[in-house]
Length: 543
Image (cartoon, rainbow, N blue to C red; front, side, top):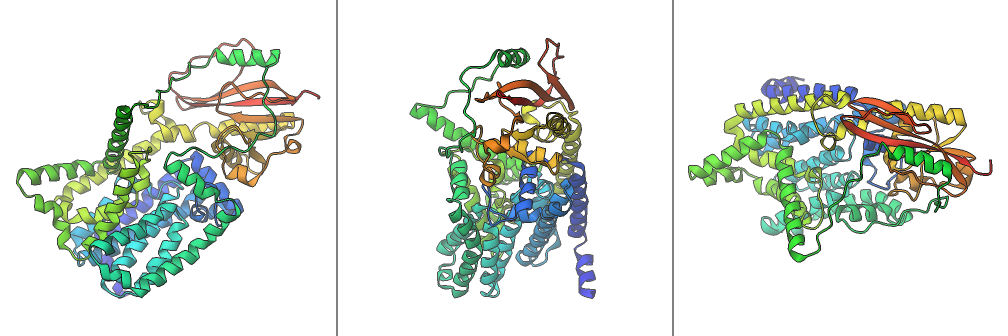
């Protein structure tokens, strides 16, 4: 107990930062409604498995509390714990690297947790947070194993295995270690405890491998095609054939709705010449690099200023000051490989900014000696980052900032779905109709907001998901009447069924509006449309 109080006394600022972040993540978890992907992942907890269509299973395990309490905060509670665990590990690693230097430990903690990426780490249910936790755990055990006791490689291997159950990009961890061993520590290739750890990792990951084996390696194929922009697998067939000719009633409904639709956006043609392809590749690379600086928030300004100042004073060696610390080459390897890997991939495919998130842990440790002299400025930057994120969190529920719809992703993903789901549930009860959805996002949110209802994703309209893997929609499930929630317009028309009614559900400046188009009604124009989706009611032509 005395040791605990001593550590709390000597690490006041890291403890204070952790407490503030706990309150911040707790507030955001309670305040924010479910996003589309969060509802999708939380739904997996109703059918726990060793794998899922989109990801390995750790994100579902992290949301296990949702199975008991079906609220957004319960689903995010495991994520919050993973984020706090990551903070603890960053402090422990920093203590080993910097010989308990308080200033360097605090700098590393700020750089890892109060960037825009770090602040988001404990906010939303996402595979990235447990993945970063196990990546950092691997980093911690690798530091101990490389410079204290090689038996720690066993725990490194176990952490590696669980990391693979979080995201498949955990493959960059052994790649990073291989880089370190090849260039800095070749005797590591002869370390028996390392191979024992790898066996442990394979045993843990084998659970996911055999799940994929039983499901035609669907998760691996999806991630490879998604990450490398390869041609997508064919979608499962629709249970009903599509109509070639619309009936008069259907033509009227669609024409009425068409009058209120914005003209479709013209997508640019893909590059065809060699020069245009090179330009597109370089643009993707620069976009990726720019996004990494953006994720750092105002820290990036301090970093750029420090680099410019050092170059101007001809103190370029100062920028490599982290190399003076023991075990720095190990951290360098675990930082370089993720950023280098995704930089290369960006030349061939679009990379999401968060895919390289694990690299920011090592980057924070490497930059700590460089930026520690500017700790007071870092505290100011951290505060600004936090205030900006709080402002965006509040905006997400009220959409009051003058952002374009394309920039307002969180508001688009959370607003209007609860009201739209209630409207859908009322219609389903009124018409005794089953409910289907075009996309996995709509399916997930409808299931969340209409608990106890059997809602399925209609196959063949958009990309497949865990819903289409779990449930094959049959004509018996469709019944005499059914409702289809969809994003595309015009709505699909099915053989044997008539489109009897059509509604548009839209979120305009944060307010949900629902329109029907079975009459010549006037619809007020929306000044700021966040998103819209549609609800179509189909009746069996025989009935």
